[in-house]
Amino acid sequence: MKPKRLVTNAMLIAMYVVLSLVATINAGNMKFTLDSLPIIVGAALFGPVDGMLIGLLGSFTNQMLTYGFSATTLLWIIPAGVRGLLIGLFAKHHNFDMSFKQTQFITISSALIVTVLNTAAMYIDSKIYGYYSFAYVFGGIVPRIIAGIIIAFVFGAILPHILKPIRRIVIEPKKQTAKKEEPKERRCPYCKAPIPEDAEKCDYCGTKF
Image (cartoon, rainbow, N blue to C red; front, side):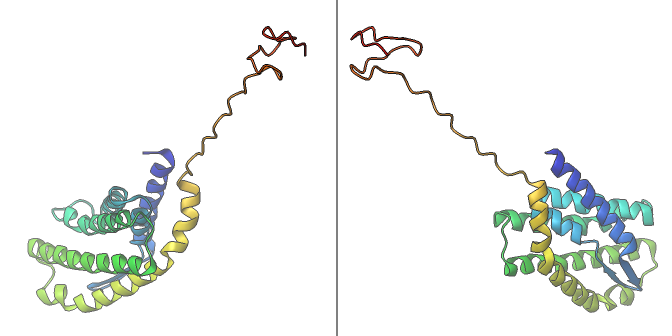
């Protein structure tokens, strides 16, 4: 992995953690957050592996800072990894040049899948620790889906404007190797015989230069 790409991934992971801590509103069983943006950017920029790693490592770091490690930690970090994986695969399939409709499709589709996975994680968590009721877990699923669609639509709309300047900086242009012109062989202007560069006369016809 190239240094620029590695540094960019590290910055996106850090950005995910910051957004998950300062740009997140928890309202009971509802959560409004902007932390998915770095995952979307990394996946659309570099592909499925980078997108998945940004999601998994960013989400894991956030879990450690917020709740510490528990029996369900892995369940809570899977959705973010899945989001990066799906968007990265889709972007790679389209040669990292998605249209507006394609971008909206994958950001919204992945948001819906993430909402389902988060709800499943919440349900399993409630069964293990017993502090969420069935109504609490599933009662807010419709508002969560709507919120996820809205945020995904906004991110999909601004994504091309974010990727354009990053690509110029991070993705190095292919170096064009110029073909070296081979030196032309010196020939006698009269008999056309090849002659050395420093010759003062032609050895074949005797013409002086």
